[in-house]
Image (cartoon, rainbow, N blue to C red; front, side, top):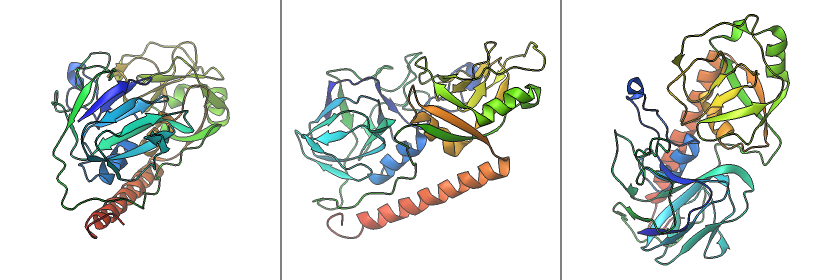
Length: 325
């Protein structure tokens, strides 16, 4: 249904993660920016957990072998369809032979391509996501490469689709560059860090180092320290946990983070700001702000309400007439 003609920097198939296997050491994984993944699927009326193609910084070249409908959400990596700029956050009618390419990233660093009917790959342990380090799931457990063919599910078009003239509002504000605000909760070992460290963590900015990937973002900035060094028994960690190893430089654990960790945890990124971190690239700066659990929960509820409104609006557009208007 489509063929990868160039692979891009890191292109893989992801969904919303693999749950229920952490006790066996199998990570959750899934899309680094789950909000953009969900939006992309909603725009082509897929289930939110259908697999999408996650592309990083420099996207792939994709040739479509059949007519279909796609949408692209997340970072703006300068997408073009047959050499013409492609509208993001909108259902796009694809004709057989169309070629999707990407240029320089303008905002963010990850984009998500959803295909109406989903991508035809088998689930592994209940998930379509690619666990790259273990070579599990996705397309043969690896990033997409030149020459890979991907099939898609049934298109199921109720009507002939002619064009789209609308797009969805971006629920994730991606700043083009500079300092990005990230809200966090106090971590399990927050009280064990010195006041100087807490002040530095919440008032200074930290730069994302080049030694960052889907497993974790290493941060450069003021070193953090505990009142007293001590041995910590390894315990559960998750996407968004901020650990501080012995060198004092924080690490934000990302989608492919390990299941347990033994470093002190100063903070946890709140769920609604995980996409903000995922769309930040090496060289960008993060500014942390502590919020309460109540605030974090309310922000999450508000985001889910926005997604529900978006889903309803898209459904109305699809059912309005013989074309998207």
